[in-house]
Amino acid sequence: MLFQLSEPCLVYQPYRETFRDESEVELALRAIRSVVENNPGEFVIQTYFGDASPIFSKLLDLPVRGIGIDLFETDVSSLSDQTSKTLVLGVVDSRESYVEDPRWIADTARKFREQVDVQDLVFASNSDLKFVPQGIANQKLEALSKASELFKGSR
Amino acid sequence: MSKLFPVQEIGSLAKPKWRTKGLRQPLSAQDLSEAEGWAEKLGIDDFHDRAKSILKTSDDKTRTKEVLELSTMYGLRLFETAGIDNDGVGGEQQRVEMYEHVIKAVQGMHLLGHVHSFDYKYFNKGVAESKISRKHPIYAPEFSDIKKYAHRAVKVPITGPYTLVDWSFSGYYVQKQRASSPKTRKIEAKREFLQDIVEQVVRPEIRDLVNAGASWIQIDEPAVTAHPEPQEMELFVEAWNETVRGFSCKFSDHTCYPSEIGYKVLAEYAPKLDKCDQLALEFANRDTSRLGVDASSREGYSDLKHFVDAGFSGEFGLGVAHVHDFTGNVSSGAGEAVGRDLIESPELVRDRLLYATKIVGNPAKIWANPDCGLRTRTWDVSFAKLANITKGAELAREAFE
Image (tube, rainbow over all chains, first blue to last red; front, side, top):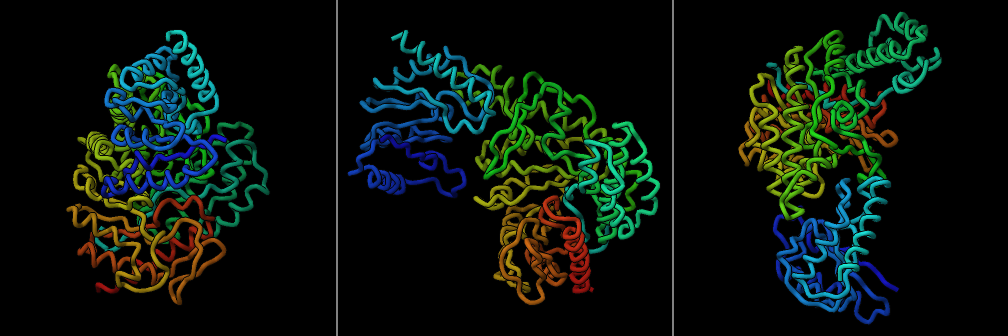
């Protein structure tokens, strides 16, 4: 069984007077570890609404199958790492109706791979698609699917 | 206005069934029975003539116009009968709601369909598909009826530019951006979209309203506190200052209470808002329902201090009546819980005004109002609340005589 732990607050905390400090991040990561360790299921930690780059390396150290990041908040050029995990790229924007070009999505994934040494990439929306009307959500999913084909074809 | 604690409304009132149905289909005499019941209470002397005309017409356009005009007059009379000093636009009877009403009048925008807002709420969200402009005046027809029927001062609430943009998809404005970072493209798109909403839609609208005689415009910006990041707050301030530039009328801001962060962030930026004569804010929804002018009894008003500390020198439109469903206990003398409603007593309203005066320092800077528009309450409840705000303001005034 694969579980997604949705963790926007790891990267998005505008309502806080003081942004999370190191000890709070460690506490949050310990909480995630306590959930996933000794659990027969597999886990993906999905972050969104905020920039994952400050804690990206720490996320990669978690004993989980995959990490998801929002590429409309996280600048690809700010990342640099290597991982055997699955990375879920939030590469269509679920808070904007403009449907991304599959070529742009594939290009963004290529740029991502220039920064991060990873084999297993999954293309996804950056957060829930409930923020766009159904018709737009369908078009965005089709764009992801086409982009995935383009990306595979270019490898 | 020289008297202390003048009373104002904030915007909406519930739309009576006959108003909503009358915009879709012909009405029967039965449909108008609710209006007939209120006619005497509100002193609508020509109700029967107007009802006859509405029932007689077979033309949809004429019926719509007459129904809107009559419901606007009812709204004004309800406020007036309750003793309100500034009667606004009669409860926004001529608007579908605050977002769609404007977007439908914007060339280049298209309503895409319903999307999730919060909890079980959905709204019809628009997208900018090309450079935007105003198709036709948005609030002017309403204001024309207001001028005809208002007996007291009026203020015109309008939806603010930041909220209009924040609640829309930027579409065209995103696509034209060339920055390599998607995040930068989104921010630049929002800035450009906002500039166009201000220049092409909101300023022309204010110009028309001012030319038609409006002397006070309330800019509703509920979205602003949903994005307390400095970059977004600066965008809001820039848009506000450009919106009001050069106009000589009173401006006020109405922003609901952001439950996650409180008013502290808004307070920090409020002194930067040009010509912002008043902030109309929500406090009663989180206050206790017991009498007293001590800090603990009036805990819902603690954020007022942030505005004073930050140096905001304008007036406060103080929310002294709850506008949501109420659950909880009401102490003796503080009011009455009726079903899902709290009818605040005049004494509770008085204590809220007097406590706010202690924080603000100058009673002449305080207006009394409900926390927000009253559209979720019945007319009976709205009337009872407003009448008690009026009486409570009178009691507070007596403390200074």
